Length: 188
Image (cartoon, rainbow, N blue to C red; front, side, top):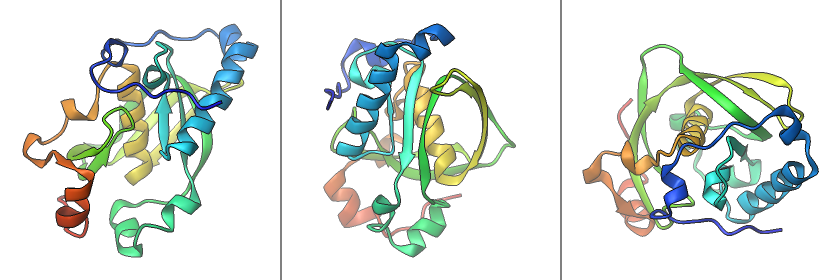
């Protein structure tokens, strides 16, 4: 089932989400929610979707950077962003730690701030400790674009949007991003 994605201004996007217990994660309701969030993310299309974005205050996000989405991106841009396909997975109750001090800046957008993008500096590498959809502990080490996706979705679980971290003068519509900024290099 396709879920409604709430837009900036909805109070739930600014509230920290609550952790889920293993029993809750394994419940039929949360398992159905995960499937619906996956379908909603794919339909949007997006590379991540956090529960607050569909109006639920749970520490739960789904992530997937499908190969078919990568076909629309130039090889140079893929290399610049260190972007490769990421299989579908779920993160619950994540704790994130930057690995090293290196930051990397790229434009990013958000399904809850539809139609806009801005440059955001984020950690190049991260380590995420979380539970998966089976309530099993998981450790994820990521770099490049995958690290950016994780940081973006975990921000949602803490009531933060990319517009809180953006360089304000870089805020642009998707159309203007494509016309003026897409082919320009960003700082690393």
